[in-house]
Image (cartoon, rainbow, N blue to C red):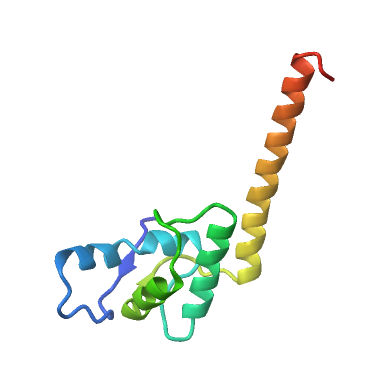
Length: 121
């Protein structure tokens, strides 16, 4: 299935080409947080999820999150919709916890295997 990003309802009057390109690709960060639209009523949830990803080392942004900048960007993006399947926060957090748990397990088992191979265990 193709990932769609619909920004027709976003107020883009006066935006330059780079701003249009940025909003047109914002579906990818939205996919990472299991959210399918930006509205006045869900900006807090979007910010919470982006901050959560950053806290576990999985930020989708190149730079650390600045909440003022993110909030202003989301205000500008009100009306954006995607075909991402929206999931509850519990589902989102559980999915991330499984990823963290899997990585922790892999790291420990790799360490133990190395110690065993070196005759330390």
